[in-house]
Image (cartoon, rainbow, N blue to C red; front, top):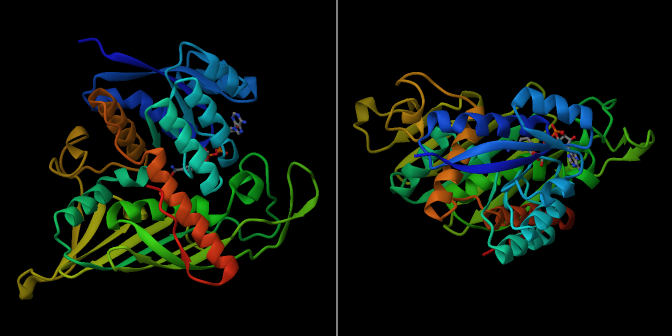
Length: 382
Ligand SMILES: NC(=O)c1ccc[n+]([C@@H]2O[C@H](COP(=O)([O-])OP(=O)(O)OC[C@H]3O[C@@H](n4cnc5c(N)ncnc54)[C@H](O)[C@@H]3O)[C@@H](O)[C@H]2O)c1
């Protein structure tokens, strides 16, 4: 049977442009699907760079204005891999044009903006998804299965961290290519929207809704030169954020993120403690899940280090043979595989725009609490 073509228009050729392109190219080699992505066009403002990217990754054509890309009749799906401040405008225009949309995280600059994006995709009834890719690390997907099977029992604690160290130098400028994450006007927020958004998405997927939060943030370096204006300007992002949370299931949580933890590059970890069992996961060792079950026979009870490479582990039968692990880029392959399978079935799996709006509301509540110094309730997205 010939596969149905899904003609992709990618916006942004940076870090995520590469992970998505890699996933589009590989997915049909490893997953048996009715749909096949076709790399129709890449859009970036610089024609020369877009051309070089298109040649390297096999895109058929380029555009230099995303509006022209959206206007093309030969594009079925718009994939937004550009910085946060352009997600909403592009997504809303794409929805109005009837295109399917894959959007990078965080969904939007804030909750109210995200709400307009959800309204646009719902009005247009276009399939949509947000690239919170950590849900599709096989070990994290297995954690979800174990929790849903009730193996942990009642959950008491959720503990997450995302630590980096790349902005410690006070001489690092803000703004422009590669450094837009330090510019609040482009990023929306600092570590809260960039890193904690990932931790929050995983947490609400694994542990359900969050009711209220109490946060503190800090901007350690208050002024930095702006690359686009050449002037020293106030820094508007949160360099670090830590917050307490209460989940609807009664569990207590702590979340912490910073770009000032010397020695850590992308240390995303979470631990969940339940009545019967606990789970620990670490991005630096992403193919392992640490599992402790109190019901094990006493003499051999202890933390088990599960190597998530067997055919009965999530996604793994599609890859190599048991014992051989996969990595970061595969999470994007899994996400597009699930999207394409969902398209064939007429039901797109999460995280949809609406799911991602929930994370956005939590980020807003966290930043509000850091300003007010009080517990803040999380508005409901659904
Ligand atoms: N899912 C994840 O784990 C993950 C990881 C990194 C980044 N992200 C998200 O992906 C998005 C992009 O981040 P990145 O690290 O790839 O950034 P990047 O700086 O590497 O690339 C951004 C790209 O967007 C392009 N761009 C900027 N403005 C544009 C415009 N108006 N029109 C067309 N192209 C434009 C830039 O030229 C560049 O090619 C962000 O929203 C970020 O939060 C997600």
